[in-house]
Image (cartoon, rainbow over all chains, first blue to last red):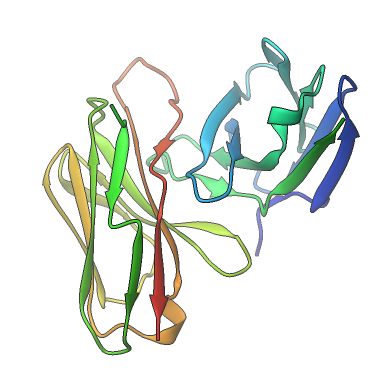
Amino acid sequence: DQQVKQNSPSLSVQEGRISILNCDYTNSMFDYFLWYKKYPAEGPTFLISISSIKDKNEDGRFTVFLNKSAKHLSLHIVPSQPGDSAVYFCAASSTGTASKLTFGTGTRLQVTL
Amino acid sequence: DTAVSQTPKYLVTQMGNDKSIKCEQNLGHDTMYWYKQDSKKFLKIMFSYNNKELIINETVPNRFSPKSPDKAHLNLHINSLELGDSAVYFCASSSTAKGAGAQPQHFGDGTRLSIL
């Protein structure tokens, strides 16, 4: 039973344009959401997070939007750069579960020149 | 100055052997984790330790035994290795200090375990 889903296994975007990565979850107890970026042969690197009390969090080129009623979050990267090409994982946790992260299956982003 | 470091990076061994993976973090975090990424690239929690105490054990076979000698280290010992244990194992750490709110986990670069 996959509680965090990333339905697009891959996404290709031109350099300078906006990349939008999507994530859906089913567990209404989740109250903290994160995005990680992963390069081959490296561990996931934390990008940005959002608490369920907010609907938007921004950090430079990265913005995460949370729609609690739809149980949906998205990561916007603008402008996209070739160095953004990686696999992006969405993750979620709930208070009281000792910070256990539940991950999605990832979306491979390719930023083309 | 690596924040979360795992050794070895690659581990190739035969079925039935016993092996260990070591993890160390220098971030001053009080909680450490082991995750397994399987062939479908799905990352799943295995164990978590907070201040050397086991707090998460996700129905992992008891051939897997984590050991935390101190807050900065969490090692994973695997007995009687099976073909299905082939995967990438990631160590992570985070701070769970009260009042700090939810904090992100920081990951090591993984140990790729291949069972022949």
